[in-house]
Every structure is written in structure tokens, then in C-alpha cells.
Amino acid sequence: MPALNEALRWLRQAEHDIATRYPDSLPGGIPAEAFDEWAARRTLETAETIAAHVRERIGPR
Image 1 (cartoon, rainbow, N blue to C red):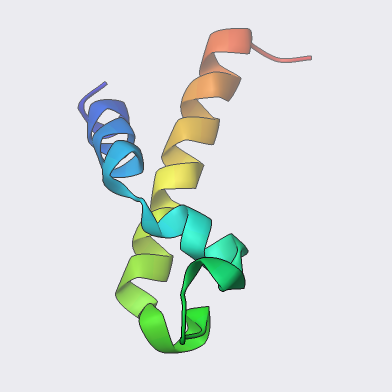
Image 2 (cartoon, helix red, strand yellow):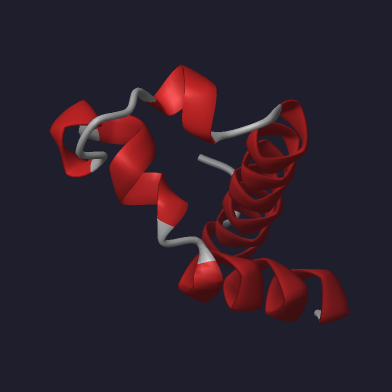
């Protein structure tokens, strides 16, 4: 579960998530200029970790 705990910690700190989906939340800027590849990859890894944990908890369908 350490990976899940780390993912959840990142998710709580990832306020950039809103800004990447709602461009008007960045007055005077656009998401493509405000966020880098590292943040995008980290967010994707976080989502994959959480999804894997959920799949493990609910089991096969």
C-alpha cells in the first residue's frame, strides 16, 4: 500500500488538476504553458496507481 499512500498524498496536493481541466482558472495563461511533462506523467502514474488499487479491491467482473 505504500504506492497507494504516495498516490493519494500526491492527489491531495495536486491542485493543478483543476487548472488543467478548466483553462479559465489560469487568469492570463493556458495550461500548456503552465504545466510540464513531469507533472503530466506524475498525474498519470497517480491515476494508474489508484485505478489498480480500486480494481484489486472490487475484484474481477
